[in-house]
Image (cartoon, rainbow, N blue to C red; front, side, top):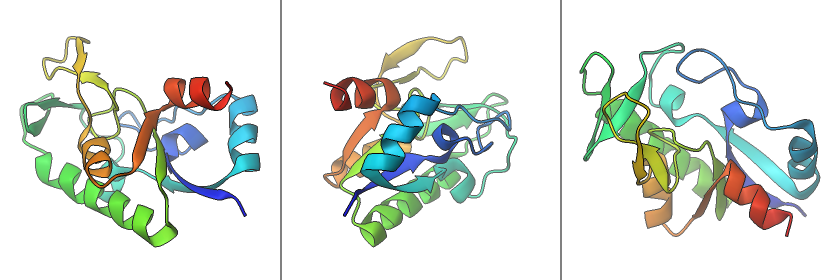
Length: 148
């Protein structure tokens, strides 16, 4: 039986990112995932009620603001809660999430200035999943670790 894995839907090719596009993993990595894991795709931003496409957002302290200054923290929190529900429903103890995202980023996110500046930190979903004991990894770290 394959290990269940929560995964950002955009990494599988679903066009759910803020610009209405995806960020699919290379074919070799997708094949590896499908061979070794039972995949459970999630897009916390969409699942939280945000449209696709949507105005880009970044974390600023404990809030998430979009580029025009609107506070979108509530849909981000709602999407994170739904991702946690998915983990519990499918018994996922590990999550592979899109790096640098204000919801899925793990270890490094944009600083909220919309200048492309990265800072240490986690997205809303990554932060919640980690607090619940789920191992959360971005795509570069995941494959670095898995291919060792």
